[in-house]
Image (cartoon, rainbow, N blue to C red; front, side, top):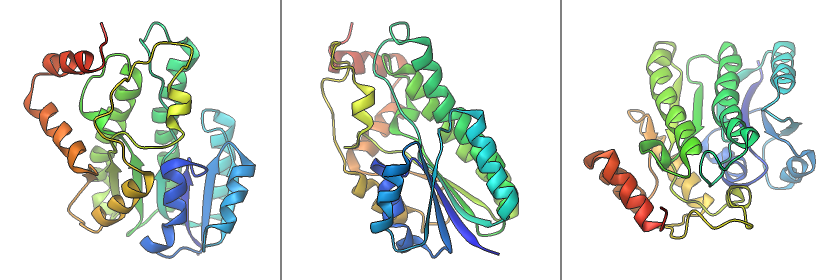
Length: 258
C-alpha cells in the first residue's frame, strides 16, 4: 500500500516550507500538495526530494472536497501524514468586512479543515499523524480580528479533542500555534485602502523557524500542540493569567483601536 503525505496550503508560506522539509520528518512514497494554483504547485517539484502530486483545488468548494475523496477512494493509499495548513485572515471589524469575507474564513479555516480530516481518517492507521496549523490567536478574543481568531480557537480545541479520541487507534493529532509570521498571509489580511488594524507587531517569525520548531516539538510524543518562540509563549502565558476583558483592552490600546 502506498504511503502518502497530504499538505494543504502547500504553495506558499508555512505550507510550502513544510513541503520542502518533509523528508526530514519521515519518508513517503508520494506527497499530495493542495492549493488553488497549479502553477505554484508545479514549481515545488524542483525543491522537493519526494515524488510530488500537485492537486489544484479550492477547498472552500464542496466539489473540490468530493474530488479529493474520489481520488482517495480510487487509490486507497495509506495517509501517513495530513497537514492542514490552508487558511486566511482579514483584519477589520466584523461588520465592515463583507459577508463573503467573514464566511470565507470560516469555510476554509474551519469547515474545510474539518472535512479534510474526516475524509482522510478511513485511510489512516496506527502511526499516522495529523498536523493542524492553528495560531497564538487561538488563546484569546481579538477585536478587529475576531472571526479569524475564533476559527483558530476551533482548530486548536478540535485538534486536542479528536487527538484524545484517536489515541486508541494510534493516530496522533498535533497543532502548531504560530505568532506573527512573515508570509503572504498579510497580502490578503490587510486592505491598503483602509486604516491599518495592526500597527505594532510584538514579534515576527520566519516560516522556516516555525516549521523547524514544529518538527522538533513533534518528537515529544506527549505533546499535542506547540507554541514556537519565546515571545509567543510569553503572550500566551499573559493571556492565561489575565482576564479576557483586560487582554482586549491591552490589545486595543497597543494598536490604537477605539
